[in-house]
Image 1 (cartoon, rainbow, N blue to C red):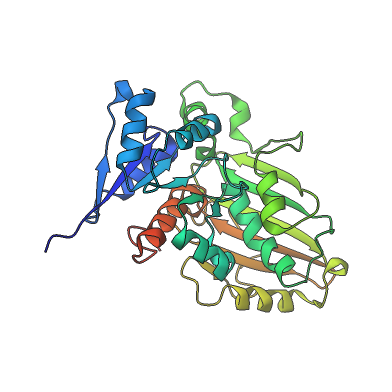
Image 2 (image 1 turned 90 degrees about the vertical axis):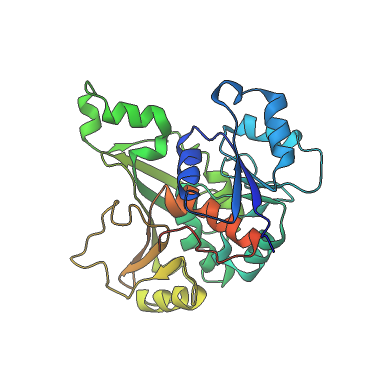
Length: 316
């Protein structure tokens, strides 16, 4: 008996995320990739044909194009996985971080519309969602976060800027951005965590290719029922117990009091660290912005939707 292969179309296969998803499919025997020629990749009719022919379509597109692609669907069969920002807080879309709760996992497994979390948001949500869900952090609490990322998160243009021969000397040093406090991930950070106000968020891009470190500093006085960082560590260990992709590291595991942004480059999981003292604590999530922060998470969602091992084709 011949196994039926799932038909996969990557709309936007020439972008950074689309290329990484395509690479990860090279050794899989359970899918059939539907391809579009370069000259037709912006042709609406051809895109619509392939989307509707597929079992699963990845929307590796700018937000407006992702919304347009969804409007092209004319059947109840095709299932959409969207790594763009367009649908992460939209009704009817599952949020693609299955480790947050059994309900999140179930919504991905059974859903036809799944939005892949943003890279910065993945780290923030992994740290803050459990605190709000368990009543440790009030939804009204003021929350801040900073995030260190490699330049690949900026897409082809930023990669070209950093890797060009005549690049600016400013690129030699880390650069803070989103200074207007209007980063596109703020909406999902607030909504998914159940916060009543968006966090104050300060991302920094530095001169290395990939890897991300998202940190959330917390004053002990704002935490309910938690008196020490060791207790906070225990709560997160319990929340993520048994998960393949999210590991809470032993307390004090950062070693030497430092964490680097690129320590998990090339890996598809996430490591969580708890540090600090009873007055001031720091939660940190270390992962690859192109892995658990993008294409790796997208394929994890696909695997769950297909009913196969969620780690299939991924590096854990």
